[in-house]
Amino acid sequence: MNPAVVVFASLYPSTEQPTAGIFIHERMKRVAGQLPVIVVSPQPWFPGQGVLRWLRPGYRPGGASHEWRDGVEIHRPRFLALPLLGRSLDSISMAVCSMPLLSRLRRAGKLDLIDAHFGYPDGHAACVIARWLRVPFTVTLRGTEPRIGAAAVRGRLQRRALRAAARVIGVAGSLADWARGQGVADERLTVVGNGVDPDLFAPIPRGEARRTLGLPDDADVLITVGGLTERKGFHRVIDVLPDLVAEHPKLHYLVVGGRSGEGDWRGRLEAQVRSLGLEQRVHFLGVVPPDALHVPLSAADVFVLASRNEGWANVLLEAMACGVPVVATDVGGNAGVVVREELGTVIPFGDREALVCELHAALGRRWDRDAIRSHARENAWDGRVDALVALLSGAAGAASAGCEQPRVEGVSRP
Image (tube, rainbow, N blue to C red):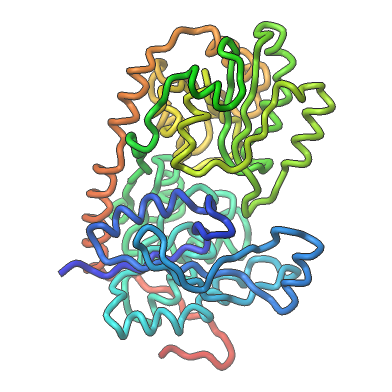
């Protein structure tokens, strides 16, 4: 009998934030085709939160308490998260406030395994709930874990969860290596990267795509897709555009994305563009839904990702599926995607000269776009999902090591 899996992820798409955690949804909706899956996406809340949104539009937009997306049922219980107290209590609050819902799912036979995404707070909250309900749990590492691991309290709670999980899944080999250094045993570590849908990200003729976007047919076009935050590095690309324009006078740069849970840098980026006199060359396209993203990707010559930190950047494979070569920083799992010179190149993070040099070379090179698309097809979702289903099914029958129960006044294990 197939185990019932509860995906536990505070970052998950909603009507208010359609691209938040889209990489988790794309992965797990396919698993839901083979295993019964319900998503529990806890949302931070505190009294008066609505008032704060007047001062900071977009602050904690949340989502509907219950909805369906692509056939997957999603619950969004609220948990108390006071912004002035930091994040060290989030996992305990998340566990306590999510417990009634998960307990009901357990009694209804809809929970055999908790599959948490991100080590903290989700992973530690799942660890606590799993102990209460006596079910196994897994943790999928997605890139924030090394940074959180350096924090005193949150890092300790995260390590406790990783060491207790029945399985720890890294979306990139670099994350599995990091987890090994945190004391996770090799036999409980697995790498399952994300995939791509080559049918959804099928290219259209470049001229057609450029006419749709109002770009000249003979332009040199760079593109970046992602949340408009410091981490994603749009500002680093904009900074080098004047150097590139000297060699590529018909250069244009497509900025695709909007605010994310990490913030919204659009205003800063627009100010940077104005200060450099690049208003006619940089195009802010906003958030583009996945089923339309192939249009700007098809219009591009080179995809560039100057990010400071990544887990597994799905968008690199999405660009390759449209035949677009990649220039990316050598962080997270990027080098695990750009594995050959015919696909693009990875450069050291923060090396401005290397960024200019490699973008200049990429714009001047004749690429074998069929070979690039072939690599993307080799990384389609089908193989990834089969591996995940087998892994989660095995973990459902495994015993987790357990997680120390938090001491919360008035709360006991059911």
